[in-house]
Length: 304
Image 1 (cartoon, one colour):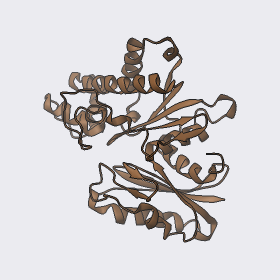
Image 2 (cartoon, rainbow, N blue to C red):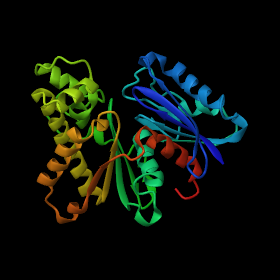
Image 3 (tube, one colour):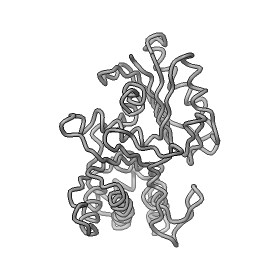
Image 4 (tube, rainbow, N blue to C red):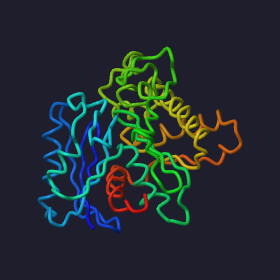
């Protein structure tokens, strides 16, 4: 069984054809050029795969999408794609491969599942029993894999760790809340705070470069984000007895300027003894973690 895996993010859509052993037979990525272009972007990224792998060779579709989402109805309403509200994503992609199974989960849930299946703990002997995967990018998302099974909750939206409140008096969040992790630790949130405090750069990539160079405002933006993420990680760890957290996404790609203060904040604020075994690592699969997880929704469906 070879499946079409699709990863819907806030700034790009990716797709791949993935074999049962995890081999990626073809991969494509298309930037999202404005929320209104989401439909065209979806068609383009899928077309790039079906031009290389004949649709007749694809036995199903796995989708990881930014949320919120409704897996029962097959609809998505990504916070950062306002043009898609209750968008029938499962039906739209199902038309590509009529009669084949289609499974949908959150993008960060797929990132977590992909890491569990093919990443740092891909060896069955060393797999985490309780893992959180986080995507820190345009938004902040999360997903749990508990005892080898993605935990998605009654509505399919478990893991929205970016919408834990860390600053009750903070900025409004696109989700409708106030002071969410996402307002502090997402790329746009970090850039917005840095600009309000005198930084004059263009985007999160420039902010990361300036932080590496020692620009004090940029450095503080990353430390501030790390503190918010540490609060979220420790909250989730206390609730779910986590042993491993894996973090990916564009902001996480900044590397030590985020992970060093993040680990320091976690160590500084860890109280309960059972939390001290927690490991926090960057994704080992990079931008492909969500694609592997989306594929696993179909390839591993009998065991999930």
